[in-house]
Image 1 (cartoon, rainbow, N blue to C red):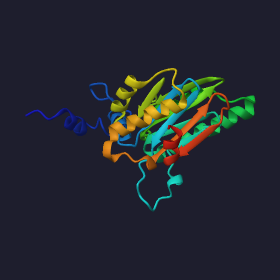
Image 2 (spheres, rainbow, N blue to C red):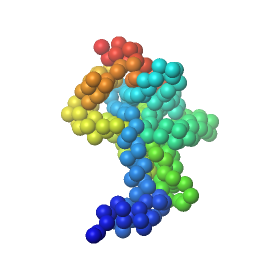
Image 3 (cartoon, helix red, strand yellow):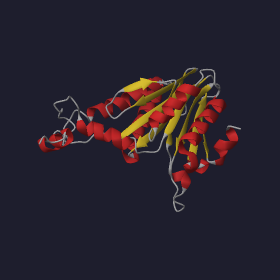
Image 4 (cartoon, helix red, strand yellow):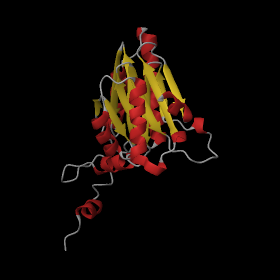
Length: 241
């Protein structure tokens, strides 16, 4: 009797290291990491006519945890924000690297860094940990949103170290369902307020009875002032009215 393919892989050791390809051409540890990422709470990011935003579900329901200490949206620079899903401790390392890079760029060139340079550095680090032995891949997807001059930009990097630019995107739990709804509702001329309202309605539709506005936070940057602003819980609901 033939063994199932996944059991064969385990028996032959293809899933024990991120640097060994299976006969089908897969890096199994990387694929396992991607599955772990999709267990994390979700975020939606969107480019809008007047800026860019990320709406994130923190999914923190424990009353003993101080809500403001559980962040899903991070300030990289005044004009760049990031959201993460997956293993948050892994993500913290990458976000801090991005913050240092942004400050080094300001000191060296006396100008704000481009959002794409941030996501490229993060993606390069993620790629390295799929290629070298002795370390596991970063179990995170990172979404970077920012304004380059007067141009809103949105990027997402994956466990593999690939990154793409998006008009709108979702990461984390139910990401494919969220993206399907985004494909139906996204409009390039949406304002931040209108886009955030659409994103919140998408979350309501997907989560159903599990939806709780108090677990959400909204980070946005408008092209007219280039200042990061963050709202939480009921503030998000008031903003999108």
